Image (cartoon, rainbow over all chains, first blue to last red; front, side, top):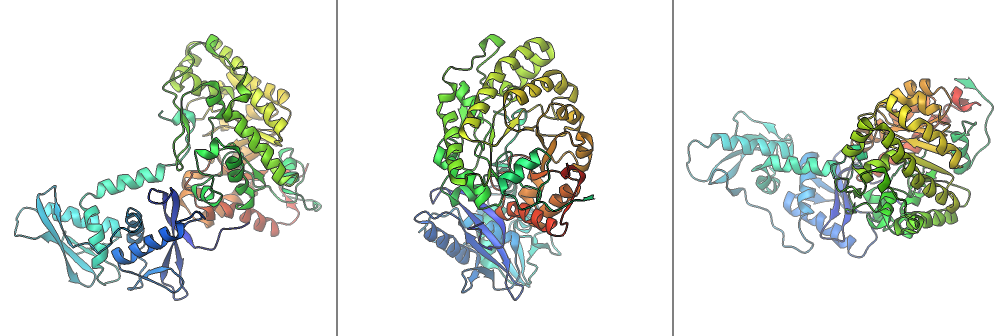
Length: 212
Length: 356
């Protein structure tokens, strides 16, 4: 057998990268000797441009998710927590950027079309975040609760005392990660539908079960 | 379990062919009667779908990874179930790298038995020639070392593709005689493609005929297909591996009477229950679950299923059907790894089905 390097467990896959010759890019998880989960962006293709593409996705995960890169080229969170679900989402979002595109951490505020107000997410310390509005605006609690629920789903965060809160298990702040996830948290159902569609892609059905 | 004398080391090909005849083997072979292609293997050898379904060198390169990368005892170049239907004139949707090509069954090409026509140049169609050339390339590459398995679709599956699923099933209810006429005419495509693949160099053929457990009963299988499958055994002179998806224990007794070398069975059927029914009349192949275990679980879960099959005396281990294209390589390599390790602690001990 050849070419199956010990990369760790593949936990996410971009099956066709539209920004690089439709290569398939995997995110692999591997525990470091100190027990901290580390992640590697990998592709088996030897085509020109693949190395640069992997480097770009890795950089995007560093910038957009505040991950740190080890000397071996793997990524980890400074808090030493794996945050696997958040990392999977970060990887998928990083793959949506074209190589060379300008990258910068996203803001913790965003205009929410559904409620027609500007939403802001504030760090409350100890890894906790609260969803609220930029201006005083009563009667939006349900919407804040839904967005906080979206963040909890996307990053496997815990609930807080209030419905509009979400907490990272590590107890530390991850502002850049929250900034990345916030646009998706506004419509988390669409994200889940997208994930379901991706999971069923490439499954061969018997002719009797096909819809075409 | 029965103690037997050691079997001398075999090549992959010898191992597969012996197991298909239920003869002694040095260890249980791991085979892929259907596809083990994944998007990552496509990248590894630069043979992406749909190109790898239509270009012989790409098809051969991707098929070879089943042995060279995954460590299976066989290679299988006919990844899809549509090569024949394309050659018969069905409308195709070739899709993209991460999805399977399909036949547009809602645009059927035939309505009545008299419509059925296997073109005189059927075997010259590019989608047929591609498979035949890929088999020749694989034989050249692997010589006698690795088993090459081909595939020829059975007439029930062709009926779905060419008549549409619903019209074909309704015809089988309303007019069984007409349905038999259709099957008789379509079987010519099955036999011609099978014989051509033998000429090209295959050792065995998978014969998928989707009388699946969800839509077709065991009695239906007996009525429409059992005798025809026996005819295939006479007409196509290599070991045939019948593939039917779904829960099929209600027809395994009939399948075991056809003379097929093996039945490629789904994980909806327990290995021990299935082995009991076929009672050593044919070999069983499979039955590692695709959507849950190989696709979504971890190597240790794969290992547990492999061992369950080995302990039930299943003669050839492999995935239950064509694996999802996004399946992780580490789960696939675990199948042969688990088989080898199981045999290292079960030396010279074979289930009854390995001993004659």
